[in-house]
Length: 455
Image 1 (cartoon, rainbow, N blue to C red):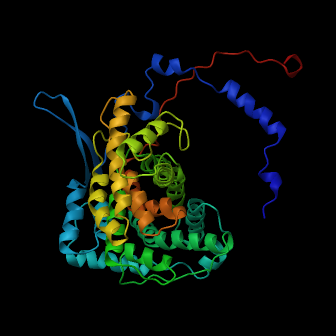
Image 2 (image 1 turned 135 degrees about the vertical axis):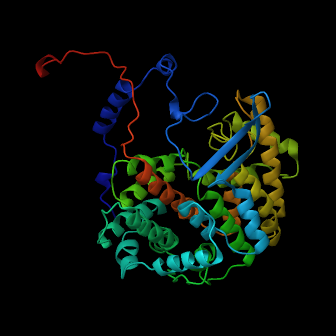
Image 3 (image 1 turned 135 degrees about the horizontal axis):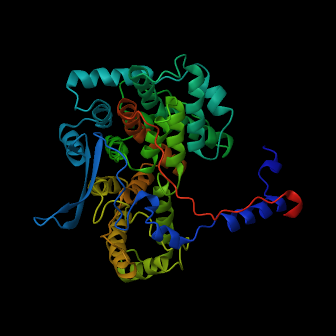
């Protein structure tokens, strides 16, 4: 066990923390005075333009014939292709589409059958960790948070790479493909180590199969019996596609651009993006959705009684229930107005899995909460655009039905998003050139220096 002295907050630390609070508190009025775009967004939620990309586009709204903004259904495009069409195409032709999506994001075009076959074979070839890596790196230092283990593993892989500092495009592509291939193993093995050493459960380290998709391999190496249904694998595959990329402005992808612009190595860049994704305001949001629904299912006695649901959701909004933050998790998005296209896709597919799992009542509860919450938020909050369910609203339910442990929710997000990060890193290296350095205005008054005897 770690020495407690490194985790304890001493009275001295508390005293210094008070100085931080006293002397680092900026008057909120100054942000308005100097027209600071907090969060790099304006009041309408529109992001400040900081770069250009060909990789993906988030389209929250449209304009009418007069050029006026019209709040409507959001759209998401990967390399100009509607993500809903990508999912629908794979469903119609009955093949897994995460690998096709990763190819599209990296190379800018959909693959032919031969190109996809070659790409999948490359990923299968790289889906093997260095000798004794699992034993020496993952099993010997389990963490309570899989994202920290994942970041540590990525940084350790730097030591196994004899060409780690080379930022030429062929080498960065090679590193990116290896990380895309290895992320499922790194994430699941990190959980298996935690589950064994921290929770006292049996340890299972299954090897991935070359002929299986990313989604199938995740379920195979996670489950003790390695078994899963075709519908389970298909739905996880779609979830991976929907999380693979979301424009250059999301927090972790912007982190990729910022860190890459400094000229650093691939492993450091990816570790930084993992740190961003770990945050509950970004990749960890679907965990809060699942926790909220567990609370709702306990507090609401009749899940079919919409009046009872409405009353409890009102309590949540009024900071009187659940975690008392006043937030209904999974509702609303920084960019989308009325609906998140990723949530729309998942909602269509979730119904089938809920019926397969005997959870039709839970599905109906989710749809009721989605509709009632949107109405309540519009009534109780001053909002500048519409509000609807975001991807976290249904992805948490998907992962719960798949039996994925909650500790793996955000790592699975990373397994998907590493494809988008890799594409953006390559794009930044090709087109960047300058280190990213936004401006901050200094608002502290000038203060004369005092000798220590006079302080």
